[in-house]
Length: 354
Image (cartoon, rainbow, N blue to C red; front, side, top):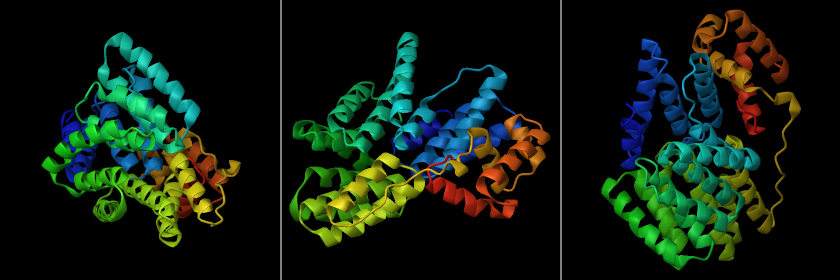
């Protein structure tokens, strides 16, 4: 199981990536295998991140942390770091990345360094700091880590093109094309089409962008589809096709804002404003700020678990679960579990880990 997840990603097999992690978590829970359950939870959380389910990913990482704290096992911060990067949380991402790289260097763990550099790259691409993204991606690619380098190559193409380094983009595209053509999945070919479009121009770029969006729409990889729409919209605006650009940018902004990818959502917002459209910045209402533990309890309750079942999963008493549920109801201004789905969806739109 520990090898199946990166292997599925290495060959761009979305279905196996999804099913293997779901099955691994289920088996570990049923067996009470607390040594490996945190790792499986974090693998599953990565799947949820790329599906745009940041709230679910946050719940899984918090559960993994709770188990590690209770058992005294080693904590892996990679997935929490990646989630912070996708949320555009600059200070936490950079602080965690620096700490992770220091610790990993001392232990000789290249995989952790690779994940930290990937997270930096995602953050900087979201913020439009392409030279910083380029440097981080190049450092991460030095490790060519199994099941992770695909992510880095994808990010590196965008960073190189936007940083004005066509030589790096061309070299990276060749590596990416070799990997994606061999896989032949919509995930692989959608990412390839988007990457080639970034480095191309004219009608060829337009066709590639549309292919990327069409292929990625057939997958569960919401973040890839939204980012394809974002870069297509940016390209259309620069081609003076403002009406077409607005269509793509609106869709990208709506998705990225809804899932909580704040830095990329802000990129889309700025582009929409440049087309002449008025778009409000998102704000976070303190009323809806759930703690990590409250978000876990709320999500498990939404999934239909009883208080004793939630307590068993999170290693807390049913009475503590009840206490957290009362806090959730107060913060979300609801009175029953039936209202959780709508309330958590709204909280998620406000950038809360719901």
